[in-house]
Amino acid sequence: MFTKQQFIDSIQLETDICKHLYGKMTDPTCLVYRPTEGQRSLLELLQYLTVCIRTPAKGLLDGDWSHLASDLEAAKTVAIDDFCHEMDRQAAWIKEQIGGIDESELRRRKTILPTKQEVLLGPALVNFPLKFVAAYRMQLFLYLKSAGYDELNTMNCWFGIDAPPPMD
Image (cartoon, rainbow, N blue to C red; front, side):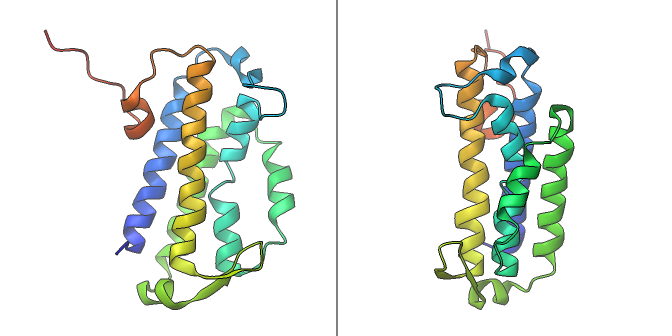
């Protein structure tokens, strides 16, 4: 139902939308914005986005989650100017890793979640890395809106483009 190319394309779209939203941020002082105490700041959210695809995908592909804590810690050191590069790096990594897997393997190969639950690899890649980046992309959009970027709209959030000007 969902091919590996469609998965790769979906990851690329989410990556592109995140980069588009990042590009809308014109005031670097908003990086300290956090909706409430205890939630990530905008900077922390952007840093987390740089690993939210690769980290769960690596765990699913390897069946080993021992890298989780170190990946999350390393994300905290990502410089804001490297955000787009790091997002591109994740998308390229996914394309390389998934590109070498046969479609039938995605449907039949089992892997393990951090909860030790056994799942099929293909659906797990959709249910975790793809859904994670989509959810955190939406969070990025909402953070930016809350931080005062009122010009952002549905087209920015779902398509990664500016809305065309209204027609007269």
